[in-house]
Length: 433
Image (cartoon, rainbow, N blue to C red):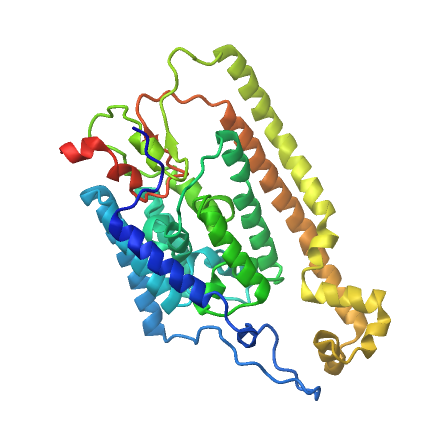
């Protein structure tokens, strides 16, 4: 008997159908709901200020309510996971998360985006991160050190919206999944670099689901969100697995979880139902005892890959730092300085808000150029660090290819497992308890 991953009960299927209908209804907002990106200009251009759709600021008390909600949700997920061993309980918690943190709170406050706030506060003395943002950043990481990725299981609105639309997930080869798994670390490094240089919060800007949660976004983001959900019908949680930068951090911390979920509470009977029920390919299975790897050959490859890690770090640092001029153009000051130098005729473009705002400020072009050079130097230094980090991740990924772990049972991979509980639901050993 072979079961495909992600099998739901009749109730779950009905809820999916209703959710998909509502999703189609809200994903096409009118263009007039485009999110405000620039401050209102003070000069006369005939420009009319659009109505902003970003969430209204919350009182401090209500921010504490959000933190309490996050704690309560993760605690409940942990209880359902380890004590009750209930996939149904985790499922309904994730539905609540989608409604509260997604649609009610408009996808903000968010642990995923908090990475940028914390990074900026560490490198910019003029920016202070609030206690609530710091709590949203730290709490899921702390929980993951003890219980695994319970935040991903039921406390993340981005994960919940993807989890509900899985229809028929496909299986990825192990080598491809590990290769694609490098990108979240690259994205994490880029997000930190852009944040600490004051360039942009790219995680928030390119959040594919924020337009759905706020029922309004730029057209490109609407297309991105729809595309991600369509892909998610067949590639389970594509954003979580191959994009999410916060998930990269959780993948590392949950690897050391002291009480990570187990598929069965007793002895594994090797039925393989857990393997086929997991849509994320996160089940480690026993190796073939008759096909043991060549220990001597593996040892030589391990030593080679270990020695090559500093080489990857150096190559990565050199490659990214060499692209610092290109990367720095994402900063508005660098872009503006480059534009005014290479195309001085743009000064007469009255429709360009950035140029006209700069000219009206009275700041000399030389000052802008000096500030742009400082920013470019920051990107050069950050490029070496980012490239070295990417090289290190590549080196560790290759090293992991030759590490042989002897397993006798089917077990969830601590780093890749989202603690969703699907495998527990289909384990026949549990039903006998």
